Amino acid sequence: MPRRKPIKKSDTPAMLIARHCSDILASPGMRVERACIQHGDTSVLAHSAAVTAHCVLIARTLRIPVDERALMRGAILHDYFLYDWHDPDPSHRLHGYTHPGTACRNAIRDFAVGEIEQNMIKHHMFPLTPPRPPVVRE
Image (cartoon, rainbow, N blue to C red; front, top):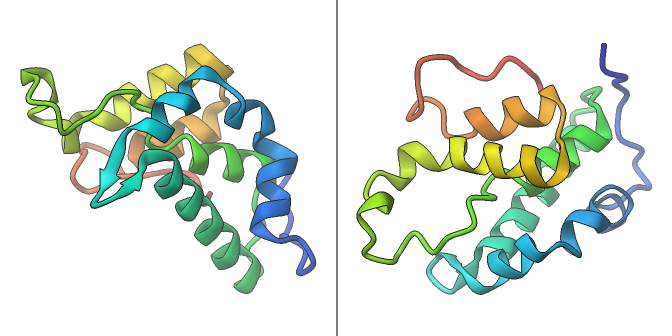
């Protein structure tokens, strides 16, 4: 059973990212994410960091008990698909539907993420990625 507690008011997103994600941010995969564009001129890494910060702000403001480490790691890895989806490669054609599975497989391979993180990553595009909704609050 995950150990869930509210995020402390004094803990900023940057502090929590540094505490729980430093190994991820130093990894070769993050160099790929830094180089790939997600939306407009925003890199996949910048997008993922912004999503992670928003997760912290929502959980902290609403005092939602969460598994802090799992929340941080699942959020920062939610788009860990490791390719430029703008390339005209035919395998990227259904990116919006398929990238959560790719990101989850990569996260398992590179960081041995747990069940909470896997659920976050696999289901972050629900309802575009049926058949099941997320089953964790993180």
